[in-house]
Image (cartoon, rainbow, N blue to C red; front, side):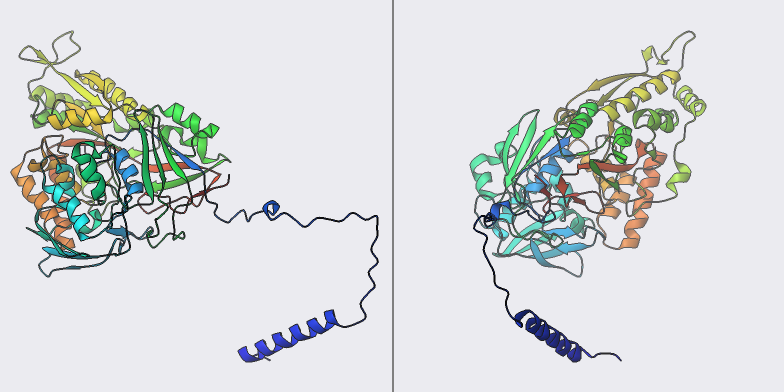
Length: 558
């Protein structure tokens, strides 16, 4: 016989009633106290064991990072190290679902896009404050975004697109008006690093020049200290109660501090991780075996939306202005040998400029990609006039040796990659001279076009990345450090950027990938999964679908 819901309730009440009777009935036993018995004191509430699974407030999370931020001014940097820090201090207008990548509201509660795709209006939350206590509103947002049009702020202009006007409709309504529809805008506005709103009080106090060392925004962490060459420390924003919707913690962060230590030498960073000096770090591919089965660490693995390493040719420098030379260097590269030496085999050759994990990737690029063919490379160099004299080690043309400078940042993987390229090109008769520069200095020199070659890895979320690295307008002011200037390619890249139709964008993305490979604008080397090692004392650490660290729920065991 099945019991209906009401019968179950009645039966439960009767059972409770009879249990109460059973306990309460009968003659009570006489209690005789032993005068010599010891009396147990009432337990001290502080001695009661806490629930080990209950989040605890306090403590310092120490993160190991391989390169130092160059500035924390969001409009003046392209460094991933800077973006990571800024993303902890700021909030984005929009966010992305950690699992699906879908665009969702955050500081903008809602938005509307006009039929022609040229206007987007945001309706902002009204309960958000900056670290200084100033209210976050449309006026403050405007104070940040209007600066994207200023000279020297080109890094952010590429992310916001071809703005015609910015309009404060009222205190909490803001409209962005565009010359053309800007395809990657919503994805870009879901990034809390480069596109967060800057605290107007700090901008007024420090100005553009000093803001990068005295930043403030609306996020869960406040800037505390920057010790150059060593660390950046952030402290909890006690007033924070507007985290993204997917966090369980709806108030201030549990941690007291986030301390980011800069350790560029991989072996030293891994040793600090093993000894507990740091709690979390990205693990170099060559070191991953140490941590995969380590009992004290949890490993997070994710696909990188980008290419780990690529060789960029400066088209403004001879002989790299010659496509035959660029193609020769692409054919002369043994990617698998580099992977084996630089990252212990934990990678795969990159065929194109975009990775297979990114929307817009064109599989046909795998059919036209450069493989290792030193004979073809030598033929192309001969055709370009760079010949190897009898008994010589370096090719010459008109009495000039084929010697190129390769500028890179410090780091084990990039240095091993550079040294492998140096050895491989030496076999072709091409001399490579390697120089290292700190990231901030290197970016400055790359923007000025002083280099012949550089090795760069990147992460991105949209094929509009091709516009940022290859469009003529980005040469010298943006990220076009290859100094590519090609009117036909420009038109294709504008197609990716200035249409909202997914099929059209995919077509232009395909053409951009094809042209960049055929003209050897730069040579992709390898791509891989990424790994993060997290000490067992760190709880509720997560990464989203693209590997972004989600720290607001994190708490420590001790």
